Structures are given as C-alpha cells and as structure tokens.
Length: 221
Image (cartoon, rainbow, N blue to C red):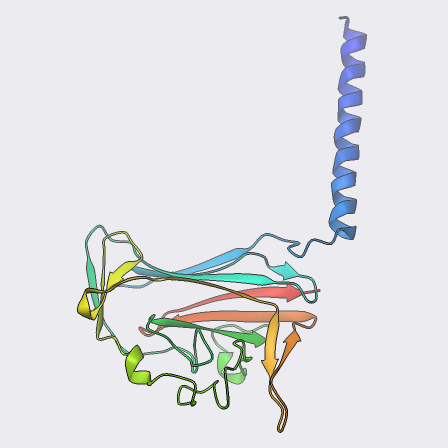
C-alpha cells in the first residue's frame, strides 16, 4: 500500500467518525431517553469516620420522567465505630416515607428551586411520599406507627462498611434507594394527587441525625 492510499484511508476514517458523532448528537437532541446527563454524588465525611453520600442517576430529566436517588452511610475506618443517636437533624421534616423518618438515621427532602445549605430555611419541602391515609404525612397520623418504634439508641458500624448493628443484634444496611416521578399535592376536601415534576431546578438534600447534610440538584426540561 502506497502513501497516497494510506492518506485516503485516513481521510475516509476521519469522515466516518465525524458522521457518527453528528448522528449521536442528533439522537441526543431528538431521542426519547429520560436520562439526558449522567448523575451526581455528594459525600460528607464526619469526624467520626462516617461518610454520608447522596447520589442521583441523572442531573436532567424530561417532564414526567423518573429520577432515582440513593443514600449511603458508610464507615470509612478500618475499625468499628459506635455512634450514639443525637437527634441533631440539619433540616426539619427529613424522611424516607409518608410517616417521616424510619429506623435509618437519615432522611431526604426535595425543594423546588435552586438552594444551598445557607438558604434552605427559606424553602418549603415538597411532599414526596404517597399519603397512606388521613394525616399520613405526619408521624402521628393514624396509619403511621408509634414514633418510639423508630428510636435507636446507637449504631455499631462494621469496619469499612455500611452495615450497622442496633439493639437486639439486628443488622441494618444503611443504604436506601428511591425513585420519583413527581410530588404529592393535597387540597382541602380532595384526595392527594401526584403532580409530575414541572420544568425548572430542584434541590435534593439528605441529612443524618448527627447534623451532616449532603445536597444535589437536578433540572426538569
């Protein structure tokens, strides 16, 4: 093969690469995929060696699309960590269900708008969890268990793990995932309805009861 033939092959290959790139760009603009951009993760490492992480599978979704979140509390140390419950929640009303918090020592809130840790107090959280009955968004609602059932005196974390042992020898994996297509709205005299996320920026926060707060954002287009 001579130099001229080699040059022609290189030019043809380059042209094919450009056409493929253009095709991918056109598909990205016109395709129906919900996840347009890759996700994000924010991690907060506390002084006791525990790392609180909040992840989302995408930073941009189409209107009516689904977005997934994952929370993980992980002992980064090579030795066990025994932490006492502190009830130092950084944001009010953090939860993982319509009944508020669970036996896990963290919760999540979603806000419409672009917020930071400094101005979250001016925001109002959306109702993310389907109400199971009258007043179910409150921990004292008739369909919610006694809050005392969620009380855990301490968490004994295994080394370099998100597994923790609580009273009675029960082992918990402190990893929790959830998916949302919108939020719930309850008007006086009507049943709760699910509203798809409307266009705009949303702020998602996860906080634990030791005062740590992780925060991510996503856009709806």
